[in-house]
Amino acid sequence: MTNDNHFLRFSLFHRFSHFLVIISFFGLVLTGMPLVFKDYGWAHWLYGVMGGYPTAGNIHRICALITFFAAFLHFAFLSVQTLVKKDRGIFWGPDSLLIQPKDLLNILGDVLWFFRLGSRPKYDRWIYWEKMEYLSLMWGTFVMASTGFVLWFPVQATSLVPAKLAAIIDLPSLALVAHRYEALLAAGFIFTIHFFHTHLLPENIPMDEAMFTGRISEEHMSHERGVYYERLKESGDLESLKVRPAGCGGSLFSKILGIPFLVIGLLMVGFMLSSLIISLVDMCC
Amino acid sequence: MASILYTLGAVNSKISRFLFVACLVVLFFAASINYLYSQENGDCLECHTDPSKVDVKVRVDHVTGEVEIVSMLVDEDAFHSSAHGGEDFYCIDCHADLEESEGEHNPNLQPVDCITFCNDDPGAEFLEGSHVKLMKENDVQPPTCKYCHAGVKSKRDVPKADDLYHRKDTIDKCGGCHEEFYYSYRNNLHGQVTALGHVDTDIATCVDCHGQHTILNSSDSESTLGADNVIETCSVCHPGANDNFVKHVAHPKYKNIAYYKSVFGAVKDIRKDPERISGIVKSPQMIITILFVVYVGILVMTFSGFGMHSVLTWLSTILDERKGKESKHDKR
Image (cartoon, rainbow over all chains, first blue to last red; front, side):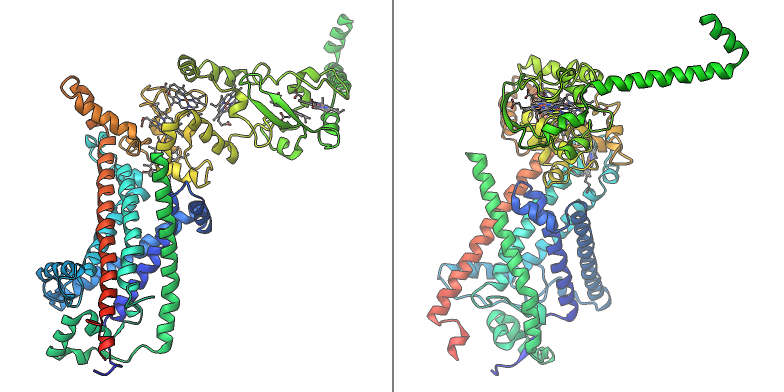
């Protein structure tokens, strides 16, 4: 195995979409979280830095539209794949991001591995937790977008509720609860679990650059996604994915881009978690 | 004299008009001379802006009995931008017992009477309203005008209605007596935005919804939140507010432990008092609370599950690497 072989893991399109998601997600979190943690000094400071009311709210809305655009791009991509390219692989099979029977076996294998009862299973193109992250991102975006629009246009949204139901269904309040706790879920998930699984594992620390440079080394690929690697090797597709390794500049650029986001995210988690603990302690004592 | 005036007036109305104006001028001067005799603001401020002449003082509030330390220095800018800082206010209008005095004065003055001379209408609106009646029924001492209308540094600097400090202060003052409603207000967007320091007139504080001096129960159709007025109240900021919109739950209870207790209590008494539980179920609070509880469950499950997964993956990877069993780095 030569050390210098690199393969394309994410196309420019997907990297661009991921970049849009990063930018908008951080914008949304930085302007939204202060409202949730309104009783704490860091939230006041952050809200001020983001421009205060109503500027922070406008940034929030702009970032929401960017997320919307990214979601639109994604669905356009899915449509082209299925309708134009007739590629059913995105729904079923090893290249699909939907949970497959094989994933359940991998989960079982991982549990055995945790208890030292077996060696680590080899994964295909997408590891099961990546699929869960993808699916929760889909669900989360749907919830955040629909409740976000209700909060943006509360008067118009309530007029959609039948008059009979309006006395027991208060749409804006429900939207606010869902928006707030789904946001805590999403921010908490991305800044801990996603960061941990993708960037902060011992083998990737400080970050996995694949989503920025698009490239993965042969060594990393066969180690991290053994089944995928073997599969491509056998079918001969591997050669066609071969690319030049990312230059020094590309790697540096993705570090400069990625690491600040990583740090901001971890700081946010620190603030959020400590505030949560303080309020729980306050509530109990 | 009267007859002369009468004939002059009849002969030449110009002269009578002149006389009339002359009388007015004389009267005006008489009035100003009257003022010259009493103290001007400048006389008071001579001492009250000079730190070498006045100091702080310990004073006991005559109504609440609170002991306060107040500065005798008058901040002219703060006073002039207050509601009573206009040209036509004299110190002695309010500090009426100094009307006749000159120079040094009795150190202990009568507290300023806010109501009698100037604000009898708004005063009565508050003092005779049902809010104060309810306070008295509940053995709560009604707040004084000065308590709700105090300025930053002194009670003297009564803030104007759109003063930002005053708007924030009002939330705290209402919230001081209505803790439960204060916390639920903070739990909604209106309260979150004001908590972060934006309290301008474009975001609702307690009084924007409930009214200022006349505060009625929301179920009273004449209250600002009653059936007759609520659309108008919300429309100030939410143009096009409709019947559905105004059913918004302004005080959600899902973070209030007493609410959960009352639900469990009602479930226990379901045989004896079925009305109670159906009242709770039919309230919009119910679905909001269920959604909240579901989300707390999802949050706890997700983070404990994935958290454990992360930690175990981390540990296992390190163990594997140490053994050199799996890692291909070591094989080569």
